[in-house]
Amino acid sequence: MRLFWLSFISLISLAVAKQIPLVDGVIGGVPNANSNIKTETVSSAAVTPGKLRFVEDSGVCETTPGVGQASGYGDIASDKSLFFWFFESRNDPDNDPLALWFNGGPGSSSMIGLFQELGPCRITNDSRSVTPNEFAWNNEANTIFIDQPVSVGFSHGDTSGIHGSQDAAVDVWTFMQVFLSDPRFAKYANNTLAIWTESYGGHYGPVFAAHFLSQNAAIEDGTVSGIKLNLKVLGIGDGLTDPLLQYPGYLEYAAKNPYHPLVSDSVIARAERAWSQSGGCKSLITECYSGGVDSVCSRAQSFCNNNILSPLAGDWDVYYVPTRDPDPYPPSFTNYLNSVASQIGAETTYRGSSSAIYSNFAQIGDWMRNSRPDLETVINAGVRTIIYDGDADYILNFNGVEAMVDGLQTQFTDLYRSQEFASFDVRGQSAGIFKNAGTFSYLRFFGAGHEVPAYKWGTLSRGEAAAQMFNQIMKDESISST
Image (cartoon, rainbow, N blue to C red; front, side, top):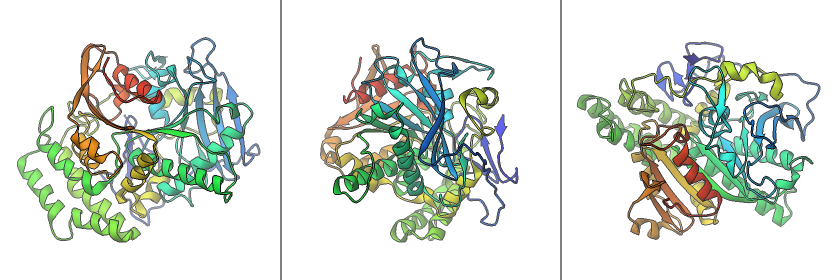
């Protein structure tokens, strides 16, 4: 059950339910710079830069009576069209906040989040149909799932100018200008805006949010014209933000986690040497941070993922370690999505992952660049921020994420460090542990894999605990038990 999309099938593969490609058998590896990876472009006479093209109320996925939806394209340039799928809030769409959702990769489609995690519908286990999601995040928020960067999912266009998270941020900002300029959606411009993301979203979230804030400041100064984005919330699940702090987490998690060891002591010992040796992973990431040279950062990604991330996974599914690789859950939705493509205004065959984008990012080593300074900027700007993860996820495990959180230098650092973990209760059941400090929160979910809203715990329903988190944060509340 694997999806391959590239010129050479042996080069990059992505399991349909997953977000991080395999490159020649290495999780998160670096493709050969000379590989002939091609991207698909679509010639459409209908493309109009600066405008939206969409269909409304297709009847696909969201079937709640009276709840609107729209899907189609934001033409951000003559050769760049980003696919989006918007769902009204089931509660009070005119006044409820607007939440943007981005999956990771880099190069993975946000339809993953829609159909496997938090959208109005879920793909069934047989991958043939969808069922309503009781705990969809549009219960109390308007939601937009955006396929980005260009060439991801149903999006199409020229990828040559997109080589990292900052380039992606520019395009997402432009998309939001187009979206909020459209008469159908302009009414949401003053509503609370939130960015939610996961996995490579540990880069996307901080970089996008910081770019939004800087553009808002430029609009205030009169140096940029546009619509200010009312960013109030940032949520990052199982994210890669600060590799230097997070990579030792692979060593810790592989040896000891809530489920079982992943590999033998000898494999862990080899990975420990690869981390600390002269010219090894730690020194390469440090050099990447200090100089930012593309070749150094790319070499750091290649070395660390070849010698630490990949071998320490053993035979277990890196996204949900209680099962052996590959875990068939969450199920594939690709065939179903292509079957309804014409109904939702899609213009291409769906691609779960863009090899062109992944390759572009890998060549500059964007993976190993530190997004923590941007995250600190966003937190210090007063944006309510939550970092969360699932304790069954190896690929971005809680050891590494918590090390990154502990390393944050913000206005709430001292308060956060003084807190003890508290139980996150959902309907009286402990579903995780959390800390709050000012407008910052951290939450570790029990029993959840990489895609936290896809999982259940105890007698709770699938996605119920994640929905409680989402709704509290979107109401500008700290995390609390119920």
